[in-house]
Image (cartoon, rainbow, N blue to C red):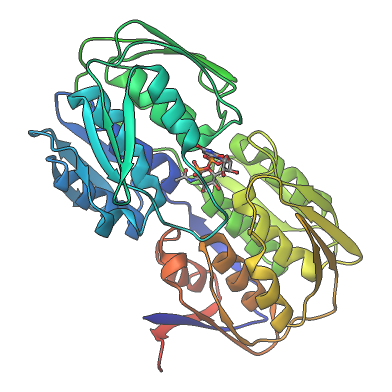
Length: 418
Ligand code: UD1
């Protein structure tokens, strides 16, 4: 295991190129089970979850190649089983349910693990697939699904779930007849998946709105596709500019998809704007507190909640954060407190009172975005911060120490016992 050592207090300055999106690449990789021809993807981030997915696809019978942010997936004879060994490390594995049922009418997928943020059930995925004609049983920790050919259905989600929408969308493209999905997630990653599927010949309308209509086709063909840039990685670097009073230019940065985050950061005193070269982020004023409520897209993303809280710790005045998507997503709070932050939690709400300074400390990463918030705090803290258990961070950020180091941060990766 490894840890990051950060010497805080350096203003970050320079240019960072944003990677392809992890959360868009994962469903698109699973969707590559659907076409009968070869899929070539570019702008795929080099991350552990991507490697896990490629191993899973190979276990399911695909032939995968991966080099320099490019992935090639060639179809083979599909097998229905996604084993616990792989699935336990990555919750998104459940996204193979829809494609497997659509292609071979059976799936045996271990119940997912992944980030320890709340219960995160998959009932909406199963309910929707059942309406399309699949039958499920749970046995020995596995979801076992079967169907003849899936048929079009009218599915209304109880809440807009990103993974649920993606699973059903992938199932519907090869189903018999028309599927209407209502109260779906509007996240840009769902839109990217729909675009990929359409490039393979799928008939989809309405992605990005709360209702998606799919007309099933009998087969899909392979395609070349570039994955969208990662709005959460980009948002984390915007926050890094804010917390270090720095000046960063982000290239390959999605701007519109980050609107809610940029509006909030600007209201805290940052000056983030689109320029011909990319998105430029710096501070116009000293940071001041604000209130944030996480919401489904286009609201403020839960995946940026921990990072903006790091900024609030050093902003003038009080801030409030309400987490409305996941329970248990305040695990960064006690670690930030170890660095001197003043945060109180009551239920789903955290009250942050700005302090003059944070001080470096050994801290423990508990989930992906919590880890990012500790790195941000470490960049601004006085003294040395050690972020332990960074395997969480590595699930979502490619070589974060190299990217931050290149714009001035004093940050290095060392073995955990060093
Ligand atoms: C995806 C993202 C994750 C992000 C989240 C919310 C990926 C790989 N992960 O996760 O980074 O934080 O969207 O933007 O894209 N729910 C149910 N039943 C279900 C499904 C979901 O109750 O069957 C609930 C969840 O517990 C949660 C809410 O719905 O409270 C939203 O979850 P969902 O949108 O499904 O998140 P993921 O797709 O797992």
